[in-house]
Amino acid sequence: MALLQISEPGQSPQPHQRKHAVGIDLGTTNSLVATVRSGMAEVLADEQGRELLPSVAHYTKEGVSCVGHEAVEHNVSDPLNTLSSVKRLLGRGLADVKTFGGQLPYEFASDDGGMPKINTAYGLISPIQVSAEILRKLAGRAEIAFDNMLDGAVITVPAYFDEAQRQATKDAATLAGIKVLRLLNEPTAAAIAYGLDEIETEAGDQERIIAIYDLGGGTFDISILRLSKGVFEVLATGGDSALGGDDFDHAIADWLRQEMALSNDLNPIEQRILLETAKFAKEELTESEQVEIEVLDWQGTLTRELMYSLIDGLIDKTLRACKRSMRDAGVQQSQISNVILVGGSTRTPRVASKVAELFGKQPLCSLDPDQVVAMGAALQAEVLVGNKSGDEMLLLDVIPLSLGIETMGGLIEKIIHRNTTIPVAKAQEFTTFKDGQTAMAIHVLQGERELASDCRSLARFELRGIPPMVAGAAKIRVAYQVDADGLLSVSAKEITSNVESRIEVKPSYGLGEEDITSMLHDSFSHARDDMQVRALREQQVEADRMIEDLLAALEKDGAALLDDNERQCLKVAIHELTELRGNTIEHRVLARQIESVAKASEEFAARRMDASIKTALAGHTLEEIEKG
Ligand code: ADP
Ligand code: MG
Image 1 (cartoon, rainbow, N blue to C red):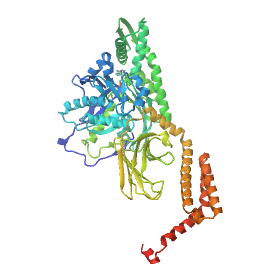
Image 2: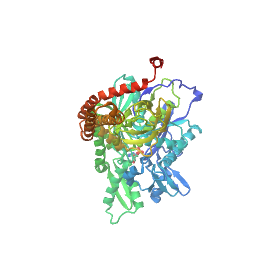
Image 3: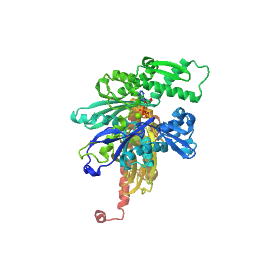
């Protein structure tokens, strides 16, 4: 999410080579497509002049029947085949979905153990397919505008989206036949739309902290970014994946139901009508002081003040999440230079005024809060496709959580740290633990904690065919590469033999925003414990190695090189070390014991060395040896 500004050379095409690129905001509730015309970002509307495309697709036995506004119409009559909010499912596993899928009315199934699919009249449909339909529809608008020439798109994703969720988004674009120039974080796109990256350049090296408050239909996201020396760093992300404008609608509908004093329950169609009415009234009250409502034989008035009393509790919930994120980021509200409002629900004046009050400054809202993300994406697409002059800035993101590998003792060795700007490639060398070891298991992990079991497992693979060598002789280079979209590939190679193995990390499930927030939070609060545990594990690994080595040496040379007494002493030392290794939780105690065993076995090691040199030299002249 951090933005690193680099300029790509050779990107100043002739005017006639001008390319057509778009930015797409693939939203949970609504999606948009924007492009840059005469230097200005603007949203592309459909033939009826509508800018928002509801992120909804309707399926029949024959397949997808319609997407967007037309699909919404089927919500009441055919809810199980009218798929909405699928962004919540992208890159998730069946287990993840069970925890929040209750909010969605669909029947889930998984035919391959991977991402959950939705059972429709047409058969099993994956959330990627639904997203692809939405993207295709938006690309269609662009093709009409550009005479069938679309060269590429920047697609936005929430800042907390992990590998799996990003990959799923990219797969959806590929399925829709769209060339993805880059995936861009939504808060970053909003900051670009307001040109904050440029202000920073003018102000020199001064750092600024930006809060992006995004209240959509069903989700609330707060992101705190720091822009410093051309890099946007994510200090914190937070929010609530089940809080948005839809909850305002429900609160108003509940009030309506009370006012109507209904004796019997509403049927699903009546409920739907009530919700639609509530939503309509809410949006009206953004412009007017009061609204007359006529619904299901009931008539009445809803004033702004009354609506505010219904939704204030919900808004306050978002403010608490903002405070939490500021705490996580370690910033005071006075340090925040800009607040940006994103998402349709920030149109409600009460939301804007409460946010202004919390941060102690007027939020930026001159751009349409529905459109700001798509506009920022369009500006970035324009640069990436090569329409801007050579010195134009490119913005790069950072990875949200560290990527690492599991090492002996169940620890994680971080290879790429959180907030590293991407693309990035990093490698680290590892070695074998046992004599003659011919395979090595590679376990790819993501997270901030010190123990592998506390991090998220992304993938496992094996490097096979390592030539047998003594422990510690093989050199295995594990390389992690994260491309500009935040997608990871891992390779492992034994250097002396050139044996190689690689995988694209394509996990079938992913982390949620809460997971990431809580993993970060845990890593801070457990940092001390983790350090202790890590130090202990390291000493345990060291102890194991020493015990194994010494037992093997005793077995081989003990009888020949040591007398009874010496052998007994060494056995006792090994036994004590083994006991301590199993019992102590004090890494320093274990380290001291390891050191004393090392001392006790020094003499034995020296004699073994002499003996092996003698064996090697036996039968050779000194001359032969010197020639090598
Ligand atoms: P998402 O990011 O989840 O796709 P949006 O940013 O498009 O969602 O926001 C959709 C929400 O914005 C809906 O709850 C809708 O009712 C609300 N909304 C749209 N226009 C207005 C308005 N004029 N006043 C208040 N709320 C609005
Ligand atoms: Mg949105």
